[in-house]
Amino acid sequence: MPIAKAKTEQSEESKVIDYLQKHPETLMSYPDIFTGLSIPHQTRGVTSLVERQLTMLRDENQTIKKNMDELVSIARENEELNQRFHRLALELMSSDQLHDVLSLVQDQVQTFFYTDYVCFKFLPTINDRLKRLSTHYLDANSGIVDIATPWVSGRKPICGKQKDSINAALFGADLDIDSCAIIPLYHGSDLGLLCLGSVSKERFTRKMGTIFLQQLGELVSARLQGLLAG
Image 1 (cartoon, rainbow, N blue to C red):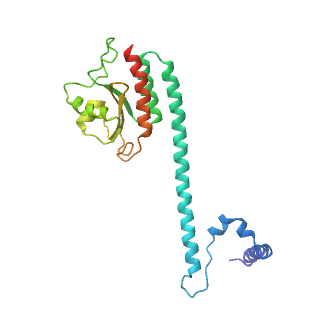
Image 2: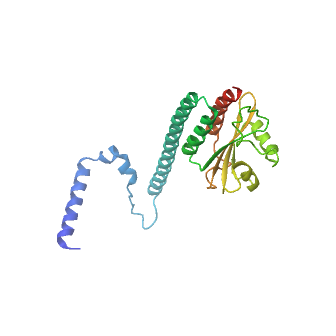
Image 3: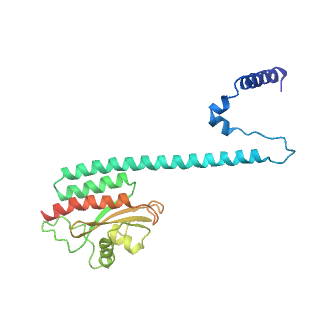
């Protein structure tokens, strides 16, 4: 190291030391700096109890900060979902045609649940005298109705990976679905399913929370029931 540079660094260190000696409360006034310091103790190669305690406290602080960051991120995501639910509810109330509601829900849900495919599957028992659901019924001859009926009556969204035969019956045989969320539709009577499919196996898992999915199903069901009755 050049002599001039060494002298400059020593001069800077001297200024810091001199300042801390004159203002010993400085580190206590800035705990983030204090907790980030690594202060060795002269114990001939053996870690002192104080140093070990400081290391443990520093690790705990980092863990707490990480957890707080995750909680803040979740809170922001939930707030964003709440806002999107509000906008969807307003648009549903302003739509008085069944095909508009179906298209609106498919477009909006695909966007704000970050999923690849969204479709409606109604039970064959749903009477639509205007033939507006002709492409949205569960195939009564495929066996899927027997599987779907308990899902609807169970009133709880089901998430995770399904058998290829079930994915084909819900989304189509030509789509590659690695995970899905199946949301019951009911309001006074059983209507069918709102199905969300993803090419990622991590998108919808069996352990994920389903409160927003259930609220979505209830919101959409209430609007569909009114239109199907008309």
